[in-house]
Length: 509
Image (tube, rainbow, N blue to C red; front, side):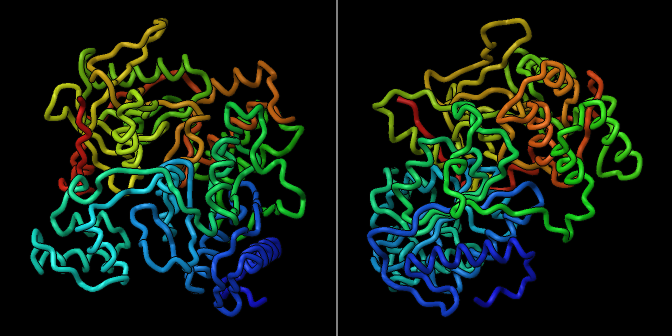
């Protein structure tokens, strides 16, 4: 077939051709931009795996552009037209908001798995606007909206293919046009899943129910989900359905962070050898730093990555202490991690509302202040498409040597949060930050314990995942010390990210 203009490596070109064959069998001809009607069954599952820097994201992006050029409709999770039942669809998914946002920053319209499993139910009046914006209907006449408001919605949608964003530009709130959420009933066509090493068996089965043709993009050197006994969902695929990409020598070739990550594959490499390598790299390249202390200023937006929970709790309490945080309240700007949602079954709709806005387990959140009602918090969900939400919250601050967390305040039920100034490397998987601090003393302990996971020393897997979270700069912290803050916590940069009209209040009953 004719490859895209972009020059692929040999294994990338082979992988591209394999996916093109896969979707051709499902009725989508990328060579000739021909689409056949959807079939009852697709082409099954294929995995494209490779370590960091192997070009997985580049390949995913090129396949997305080719499918879009062929006329395949991209499903984002915010609205789907009820018309054109013969359409062919593609959804690009990631397990977390942060992982999806990394793809969106690269021009790939990714959403979370949860946003595809559950779909919004639109008010019929405002659904007419959504259909019009999606070119599936005439310009509507809506009593509550002026022509100028509709023009604003159209102008927004022309530059950003988000129906909720366009309706917000028209002056509507989410609660105006979304009446609820429901489990997806109709299957889609093709699913691309990034960071698929994070999937567990249950999520994998859910995705196979929705997508008759599924392509997994994953890194076999990362950490498997905790409940998967060291295995990843693509491990069981037959050889012809699992293609491996190798490192691409393009702009990543001169990347000291990736060099360190790939050095961990050497079976003879010991921990002290690796630390010497990190120190030598730091001496010649400022993208790697041999850190004598944890930089507290970075912790508000980029958590310190640790292995042990005890280390995580100590660092969190040190962070709060140096910022003068009171025991009975949070400061605006403190980072949180969503630990799930505590709601009874009768409040299933509210759970779906919260999860649809990005408050899924593991979501990174910044506290913006107390809500209008007791127990409510105003929050900024990092990486979410509509990031600002007000929700009933239960915040747990874990304390050193204490079995029970301290709860500064809490609603009777709602979204639960742990502090996010430090997180375990397992929980950081799927996220990336410009600068990442890795707490090396924890990895030294893992090395001394001699633990092995999936045939590889655990410390190497931990180090690989932690290092590859860094996009621009890696700080390898070697001492148990914390710097003093040079400025207070801030939220002014986040308050301007989303219009107030996008804030969703999830009421407590």
